[in-house]
Image 1 (cartoon, rainbow, N blue to C red):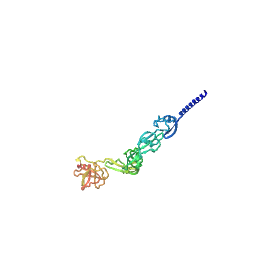
Image 2: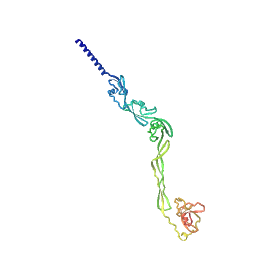
Image 3: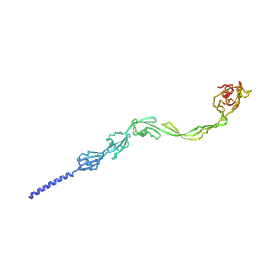
Image 4: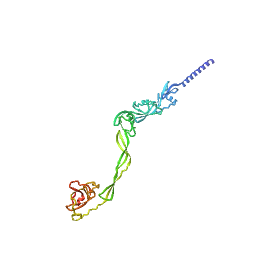
Length: 380
């Protein structure tokens, strides 16, 4: 019986061994895959069943803006390529308007294409279009080209420019300094159809000699009669140097401003003395029809006299006073006193010569209104 049992046992053992080998092959089998992370590829042999398991085994954690292809739940197949693209924040400012976008592209030009951001070769970029975008992201400013008009020295010209007003001035070959006028302000974002005006401002300081007017002062004195006056100190104009700031806009003088003064010669105040003393009244007899106490004229000159009541200054420099007993004569010295008598009524008055005239044929004296009234002549 032993001869039959041994082969049977041997066969059983053989079957058991074959089964164990089959089990071991299934347990340790791997699948070849390629994992690409932001373009960096690795060849792997994996035992994972899905893409998600492969990512977990490789410690790859996906964020909200990251992308994996194929989808995480996809089953693993031989020679599969798993692509992981990390999301990157792209801060884009277009014509001053800022927004944050997310992209999985790794260069600026690729990201703009992915995000459908239109741009032209004339647009102005703050960085190169080929700039790489890191995991931390990238900030870029884009100024779109605009059709604008720049007026310089009153002459308008059209340009296509991207950026701000100062970029338009550069295109127009204008260099503005702090004094120049630019409208709108140089930092203003350009807009289609914008009209820019540039005005050149030049300032210079010149020195000019200017006369200083003298003041006039009046001093009262009791040594002179009220109808007398005299200039004791003649007024003299002074001189000062004035520094004047002259402003020109586009070559035309627009304003002048005195910025400083320096007196070179002081003015001299003119002093005028004016009398306060009253003149003595001529003696007269109130009775007898108003005749004076003066004796009637015996001999002397007989001539026609006239009177006047208008005038500002007399020939001897006095202020004409129609109420004073004065007269004008062609040749008698000033301040000569003359007795004038009306032959019709005998009335007389003593007048002082302080003026020249009359210059009408046949007349020898021009009396003041007061003097003419005293000799009982009707006056206006």
